[in-house]
Image 1 (cartoon, rainbow, N blue to C red):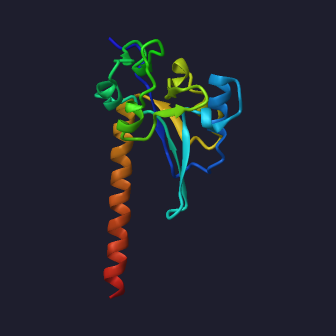
Image 2: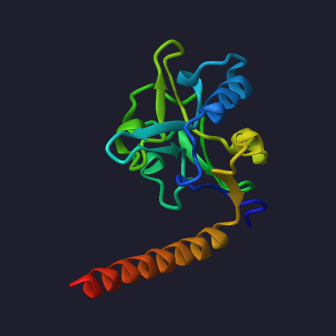
Image 3: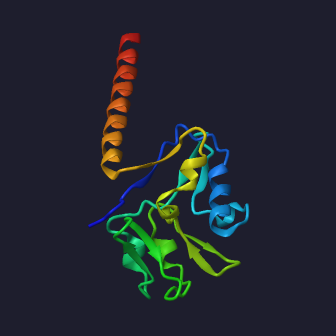
Amino acid sequence: MQKNTKVLKVDYEKCTGCRLCELVCSVKHDHVSNPIRSRIRIIKWESEGIYVPVSCQQCEDAPCVIGCPPKALSRNADIGRVEVDYEKCIGCRTCVSVCPFGAMHFVSADRKVIKCDLCDGEPQCVRFCDVSAVSFVEPKDMGLQKGREAARRLQAADRKASTLLEAR
């Protein structure tokens, strides 16, 4: 039975692109302020003009775990996260290539893969995000939030369509 299965929830509409989460993450894990060593990445979608925080989603049927040839990735049931066993990892980067979210990274200087470990249940990216673009929630809350967001988008699209029809 899992004790803590909270996950990171990203609200890209709140993200300002300050990248403080990347810096805090790298300091927490590697004691250096270097976004290359961060387990969370901010991706800028140029065409949309938005920033999107990207981090491991701790997938239930994680492709990285399934695809790892030496079985160096596994799920820690106590805190509901996918972990890397560096004793087994051979640095083949299969996990990086199969992650559908682009959340696995290879640090060339260390010759190892890195991914979000949820800071052992106290994610520092959440703690330091001034605009609350990243939060630490129960998975059931994410489903509820996604439903609300979908309803909000449908409502907005319906209003836009009504406005366009009225303009004709």
